[in-house]
Figure 1 (spheres, rainbow, N blue to C red):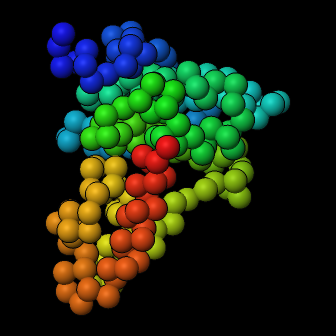
Figure 2 (cartoon, rainbow, N blue to C red; figure 1 turned 180 degrees about the vertical axis):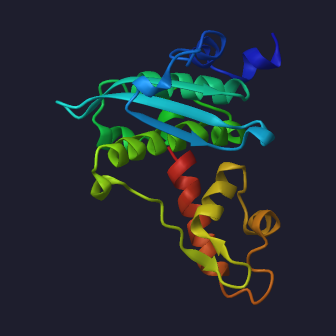
Length: 202
């Protein structure tokens, strides 16, 4: 038995070895929305495109392309299957936790690999709204500054949790918040625990 066999579920292995809906060399202008997140220089860029059934306001097709580990590939593969037939509103709010559950679980330190897929999907949906003159439907993730001294936001705390942070000390090391006046400790700790429950709670 290899480490790969021990850590990953059969469904995850299937989606890694035989990923679904991978974007090949095709004309993406035929799609109704495109989302690109990450940075190719860091090796973690993700592109996702969608076709929309405008009559029913649902996703008719979803394809993607990325460079990453087994968890990133499998997560995006199963996400592209999950959202077909979903309304745009429902698909927009699919979370990394939903994806991990559908895969039969992910190791905690790999949950962050599923984040790029849902971010790219949201970007593609917003792109569709923009192209079709529906700016009022576009949702943006508004960040709130938690540590004024180091300019650390709630989104950065959430990302730290997805990267494996579990204690306030680890959060400080990861983000540098609370290292000047320390007044943000209680709020930062509360948010950290809230995000741990959101992404890893049962």
